[in-house]
Length: 317
Image 1 (cartoon, rainbow, N blue to C red):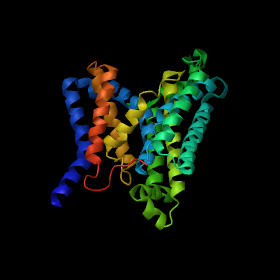
Image 2 (cartoon, rainbow, N blue to C red):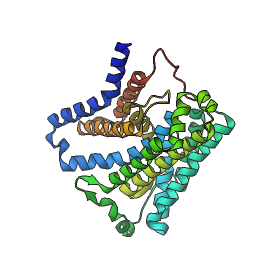
Image 3 (cartoon, helix red, strand yellow):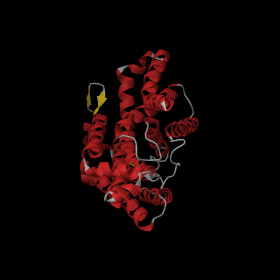
Image 4 (cartoon, rainbow, N blue to C red):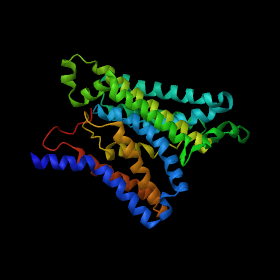
């Protein structure tokens, strides 16, 4: 028992050890890694991934999975960019509204038709990705140059921290409040720990599942809007690589796919780890395709370390 506790404590603290170790290693290789420009770029890259991963955390805590997050990011990026000439910064509301509807639809189909979440969201991913490609004619449409002045606010920063990362931290605070201070947050964790027990205690299991997917859709939409703001374009393929990165951020941070445990605070740590690893590989000129292999391997290792061997079977509902 003591050995099991020791191993669990080590695994729980491993992301912090990794964070400190990676920063030390990359700084020793390139002292400018912790310089203001490098840190600013790191935080800019972390902003959309953090929003995306926060929403995915709630779904994973319920023991389910959302494979449509990347496609929702792409569609939201397109919606923001295409509506910006008419709506200005109110385009954010259009993108987030779409994300809420897309996530809610995932949750509704999952609950009512009782289809495994990975199948529901895999089909939804194809739907939203196709919609994004159709809206931009299969490519990308840039925000007209004269309108870029309406996005100058996004270039502001607090010291080395870009305003977009500050916004993502505000989203983190909102999700942390939901997780820690609301009945919905407690229900989401209870459903992931034991759906049967949650029903016996009178918790609204279907409602918790529905809102987990809805919150995932909102987080994905915010990420898509941030990508559109950063790139100043509607890019229908921007979300292609981010589904793996979002899942990696959640599980590397310490949230197991079995559900019932985890925290958006750990996801914040996981997102920073993913961005630091990505930044380090970019500095080393590692091919993007090899980077996907690296993150896939990290995800598998993280899932293994966080799985409850000898306990519950790993099942994605």
